[in-house]
Length: 498
Ligand SMILES: *Cc1c(COP(=O)(O)O)cnc(C)c1O
Image (cartoon, rainbow, N blue to C red; front, side, top):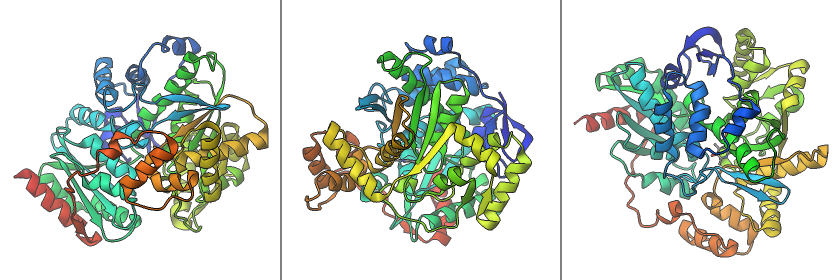
C-alpha cells in the first residue's frame, strides 16, 4: 500500500515514510492509495479478537511495510496495560443508543487511542527509512494533545519531546497533568500568549532552516505529533471496527446491520476515521458530525461553503474550539474524485480568502454519508443533566455536544437506526463544568476538591490518573516568550546531549 498527497497524487511514499514525514512537502496530507475491504465474513472472523489483535488486523491492511508480528507487538505495547479498562474502548448501552468510551487511557481523553501507539509506529518507521538521527517531537497544545503526546513519548528510545502550552489557555487539570510529567526525554514550557502564539512559535521553528541545521548537528530530526500525521489517524479506524464487533457480541446488532456514529468534532480526525471505516466495508450508516458554537463544519455540510471568517468562541468543550479543521482536506480529496487540482484550489482560497465553496453536487454527495449539527453551551449543559438524571450516566461536555446533536438528528429525521455516540473525554477532566451541570449549587474548590465533590454527587470513582496528580512534584515550571522558543529548544537539546 502506498500513500499519495492530497495536493500531488503523483507523489508516492511508503507508510513508514508518511509517518516520519507527517505532512507532505507540498503542504498536502498523505492518504492511502485505496481503501482495503473487509467483508461480512472477515468481520465474523474478528469477533473473537481482543482490542490489540483487532487493531493489529486493521493496521495490517494499511501499514504494509510492517510485518504482522511487528504490529502485534506494537499494538500490545500500546494497548496492553496502559488503559484502566480491559476493553480499552468499552461500549455501554444507554437508553436507546450506545456510548463508546475512548477515555480510558493515561490522560483521560481520546487522544490516547492514537498517541499511545504513534511513538511505537514512529520508532519503527524511523528505522525502516534508514534515519539515524533521534526524533524530536515539538508540540504546541491547547491542552489534551500535549499531555497525551508526553505520556506516549516518555522514555521511548530514539525520541525526545518538548511541549509548549499557552500560560492562560489550558484548564487547571490539564496544566497540572503537564507540569508533573515524568520521563528522561521530556520538557514542558508555558508560553506567554494564547494557543495561536504557541502554535505559530512551533511553526516558525519548523520553517527555520538555520535552526534545523543546528538541531541536525545535535543529532536530532524534527517531527510533530499533531493529528494530520497518518500514524495518528490509522489507529483511530480500529476502534470503529471494535465498537461494531462489540455491539454484535452484545447482541445489540446482527452482523451486517447498519450503525450510525455520532462524533464530537474539532479537527475532523476522529470522524474521518469513521468515514474510512465505512469505505472499508464496515456497515456504518450516517456519520453525524457534532460541533459546539464554533460550528463552521455544520455550516459547511449544510451550505457547501466553508467559511472560517467568523467569531471564535471559548466554550466548555475547548478541544472542539477550532475554525480550521485540517483533516477535512482528506475528505475533500475523496469528494473531489481524488482530483488534486480541485483540492489545491479550495485550500488556496481558504488560506488567502478564508473561505471556499464546493458546489451543490459535491455537497449533495457528502450528505449521503454525513449529517452535521451543533449544540449551544446551554444545550450541552442541559444534556449532561438530563442524561445523568435519566440514566445515572456522567458525560463530559464534548460528549454532551454529540449527544445533544444526536437528539436533534433523531427528532428531525425520525431515523431509528442503531446509533453509537463517541465519548472523547472523562467527565473528571472537565470536573467543574460537569459538576455545575448536575449539582448547580456546589461551591468551588481546587481541582481535587471538585473531583471529590463530583464523585460524591455522581457516585462514580475519581479516575486514578486524576487522583495520582495530588502531591506530585511540579517538575516543569519554566516559561518563555514566543520569540525565545527556538533558543529554548536548542539549550534543552544541548543539555540532553551532555
Ligand atoms: C481532540 C478532541 C476532540 C476533537 O477531535 P478531532 O479528531 O479533532 O475532531 C473532541 N473531544 C476531545 C475531548 C478531544 O480531546
